[in-house]
Image: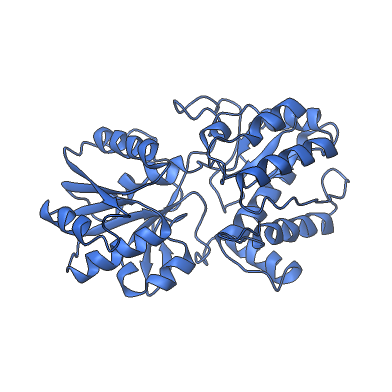
Length: 360
């Protein structure tokens, strides 16, 4: 993906590294894998064009599709009409989270935001929580609803909401003042990477020392490095394991494959997503009677024994669909929680299910 605003060529690099490692060990059921990449250029039209191109080429499956620019998810009906299973997808839109052809690798954008409440508890807990949302933000309303529901289910009663208005309050001085007026013990952020950085700098300058939580898909390592000291101590929720987790055998294998097969590529959350998606495909495809779309769809739907990549939580399908209202295709709802220490995210909890009933 090489758009003007967002460039993630390492997504393909991660997939290539995994594929070469798989093929070096004999492929899948004796079949060597091949990969064709379509660059969406991070545009809505590009995503639809790629979906049409892929459908016309009639591949066996779509692996780790990164479809995020078009919030309507218009690419998904194209895959459905073509009968193409898409495995290892990221869960970036409501269409994807409910498409019968999508086999999400983890909990999409839903899990990390639901897990912000778990992160508040992991950080030591709080009674007074403020949720800060930037405006405009196309995902703010559904994300706010998820967080509010989680706060309620976990027994939080002193909850406030503050909206940071990008145009009228570009430095967020007004928003920060409004947040601090409520004396929160914990702050949950729902904001873009740029806006999150501005908010963190404002909160730091104002002397706030309480808990701050955000999603790792927003505060990436690159963003953390750009923010600097104000990012220290921030708790992050992630649908994947953190690449800094040296004790995780899945992360070790990912780094080993990247060093061997894609030594020039960036080793980050994006290449990890690509690598994990391809590895998931290879494991789930082992049960297919043939390397073609219908057989693969049946094989994916029949996965009962959890696949343990370690870079994501245990993955299986049987008995897991339609378990989370509104997000029917989440079969692996887990997240990981970490905290920024000395500019690096340190894993704290291992994989947990944020949708599980809170402990009494």
